[in-house]
Image (cartoon, rainbow, N blue to C red):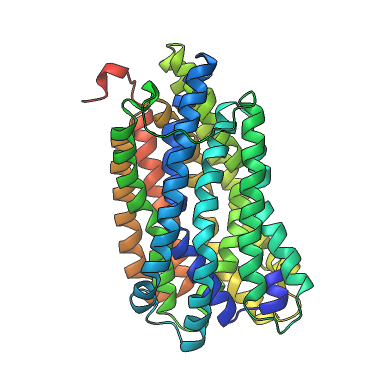
Length: 410
């Protein structure tokens, strides 16, 4: 709301949306993979002795620091290539803003990895305050944008983002240490803990699938950059509202499901875990259908209520509402697939998850290619909805079949 008030649909928002998507692409993907693979391990770790907890968490924290620093350096080194490649269609002013923003998003990569590890520790303890703390960067950006004058340019967004992610990272680390009985995860060199055994292969398989799937964000920005009329900004505003809808209930259910399903699996009750997941999935899909029906009708009113003030006018409202409506079609499938993803993760079926991710990206890339030239930004959103339809069908088919641990290779 604050960004819309200060900047509207403009080159500044285009640059911010483009930079945030490409600069956070790999860190967010890595955190997603680490969470899926780590949480079942951390659930088992709760039952071990204190010494093993200290050792593994110390090694994990050290690895997170190295990965975060490496990703920060990669953003700085690779950014000129990003601007010359996917960003080549941006105009000169937008490109200049994006070049300035990249220096701020480099430390954000480190904060994202550290915060992701802390969030996984909290979720393994079934403490879900990290979901609430996802709002911290946005709140800090709000303060910076509103305190700055109308002609402050990109600076409030830059420093609001850096300081917001820093506060979130520190806060989550403190809460994770409290949840783990005061274990901060002091740096410990090496990977000598027995809990690393088997994780490397799982991480590798999941990383391949998630990297492919995570290309959805960059390919959307690339497609939007080739369209006219500040398409990146329009897509960004619609995506913000859509993420609000996805986050209410769906994110919390998805995050809560993995430790619960992992616990049921560890007790040797795979049939019960499967039954629970399928029931939750169908219930969430039903909620999604209702949300689409209500949201389609209320979309223009909602966009106007949240964004239409200051530099954001009625024409901007109509453009964003139209894109939002097509994006809302993904809600039933996104809601439904969240729980099924957690079920397969609790079963450690990472190979089939990676395969489905590759298939989903193929659907998304093809639909972007076919729909964006015809429908504009709305086509990008419709392509995402079709991708989640494909994902839900694949996951439901796999999850509905009885599974036993020794069947994993087959």
